[in-house]
Image (cartoon, rainbow, N blue to C red; front, side):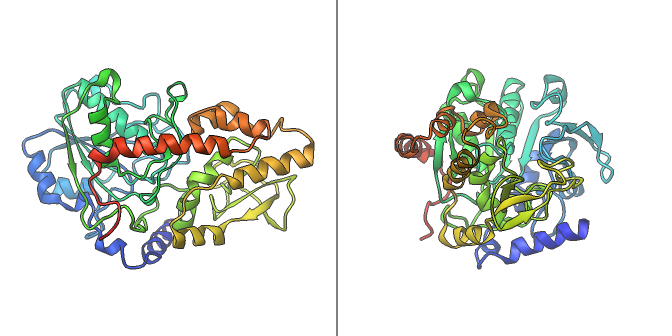
Length: 398
């Protein structure tokens, strides 16, 4: 399994056409990180993506070797080493390599407590995001910032490119649908790096009580939002390839429905289907430890669509959002069964992913999504104007 993970990582690197290697991540600026951390008690929020491309070593190992006083590590969803399935509870642990305590931010608590921050001066945040509002690393960042602000702790964000940085798409989060899969008041595809989001959260008063944290963003260099960026390390077990990442914002809406998105197969978020569907393409989800222990429709043959070629075309064209796949399955299900009941297996969770109940209600009524998309376009333009002061990188490479 480890060799397969490394092979997939290598494939992710070579699939980009000459841009990934020109970008230097924020975590490569070790001298600045060490300077800012001198004589400070440090906690790191990191995972398996917190690796320096230049050396292949983990940020924590590198900082320890440079004499930085790291006291503890906070682990998000998927764990510190990235080997936990989606949604799995992460328990406190000890890192075998460094002996540092690992405190979970995806267990009983998703926000550092005053007790866990009482011996900390600085939190360093270094995690690769994928640019979708419901990908929970963004929520973890905002909760960490909030806890730090409440407890007088500074935050350093080591910035990274957004693989969906060229687009802003989808509905804005409505306040009543705020949850861990939708914490930031942004569109589904927001087009910002986590460093930019952090600055906007501080500047726009997103943290509870509009509290502000002492924030330092160490920028990446050589990056523009229009760049096609291939992640050097898969961000989670079920997003192993560039194709799965580009399809993720669109296909994730199928998660709380009868449709499988391929969890429990070698190609999650590249294939979709369900047992009673029609189609020439078929797959069978099976238990996959570390990724999907009990996937939807486990051990049942599903019929549907292989989206790999579509994803490849999206990578080439720069597209990253399309609700037609969701709409097609809704239409197909109603044609097969005569009713919509049963398609949404978890309507409440669907609404949290969408950040609104308007999308689900329109689909249930068989309405066109054109009117909703017109509303979203107006909200997106307002969002783009509001985010402009916080952008750190050019929108288009000059």
